[in-house]
Amino acid sequence: MTNAARPSRNPAKRLSAWRLGIYALPALPLAALTLPLYMVVPTFYTDVLGLPLGAVGVVLLAVRLIDAISDPCVGWMADRYRPAFGRRRTAVAISILPTAVSAYMLLAPPAGAGLGYLFAWATALAVSFTVAYLPYVAWGAELETDYRGRSRVAGFRECGTLIGTLVAIALPFAIDGGRVTDSTEGWHGLAVLGLSIGLVLVFSGGLALAVVPEPDEHSRRYRIAFREGLAAMAANRPFLRLIAAYLLNGLANGVPATLFLYFVEARFGLPDWQGPLLFTYFACGVLGVPLALFLSRQLSKHRAWCWAMLFACAVFVVVPFLTGPMGAIIFAVIVVVTGLALGFDLSLPSSIQADVIDIDTAATGEQRSGLYFSAWSLATKLSLALGVGIAFPILQSVGFNASDGTNNSGTALFTLAALYGWTPIVFKLIAIALMWNFPLDEDAQTELRSRIETESVTLTP
Image (cartoon, rainbow, N blue to C red; front, side, top):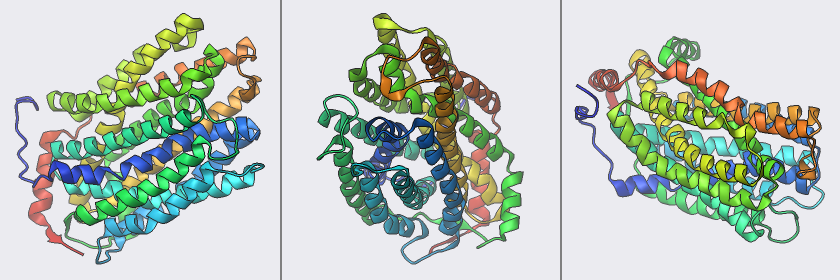
């Protein structure tokens, strides 16, 4: 019997759609922070503030490495401490204001801000964002416990993520005349975005905290020893396969994300297309989420994700050969179809992540979603940091000048195009090989949940 014909047998209580919508609201401002940090901030600090391309890449890589330390610390604390307000909701509550302030300072730098300013506020934002984001996604992973219900939660949240990303694109580009701002004076687009993110984060976070319940905790043990916990993670083979594939696919997406603005301007000479193409890409991602959920019911989550990655590889093959007006039109079509694949990349792995945690819960007796999501968050940040740390030095080595527009050499432009188009294929193909025969399907996850909920005593803070 196929997954499509088999009803979900886990009797877990479903959260109403309106509560899931409220839960998804903080994903909008959190996502609106992610796009500028990895795509627009490097361009802004190099092109507008005139900081060296290689130095900015090194600074942002250093920030990611510092952030890497905060991820497991936050995840460990989010699982270990159980305040009366709830271990997930408390962490979200205390992180909202620091995240809002750091976002504004990073996106609205004063004239003359240097590498030290970038390092300080990017680090502050990265750490405060981690304190907000990890408990937030762990919260969602525990709201529903069955195979398909988790896809539903992830779908709501990732639609919020994509809508927030669209706002992050549209607002600066609309204010600054269709392209990234070229001045630090006044209320430029990034400054308005930073202020807007802070206000929306405070409102949406407060509403979610008031309306969405703290999930039940299905643990039969509290605070397992650190060494025992690490050994259990190392023995969780589906987790190791998933995180490796997640890192590789993240790197495959991170390199073109880092180079997108440079590619559109330098390869095609169309800076005015930057905003519309970015908006189109993420808008198609929103459409891709329900398609991903539909195909995951017909196949399985991991197999549907693999097909989407294969599809993206097929269309990326031609990207380095595209030039001129016709090349720009073809590239716009590629943006549409790869945007649909993005909906799969966002919704399905995050749902599989929640399933993999069940293996650990059954083995250790403690529900450690925070620690596991810290590992996946670290993989995400590492992949994006490597995208900057790999691409920028290579471009600098071939003489690519970010502020020189299309007046780069043919070698520099082709290197840019090859990094953008072919690098993702290599990493995605390895990720597909890891995930194609992934062992945790609906049958296995249903059996795991039955064991967990039969053997555990539901504990409330």
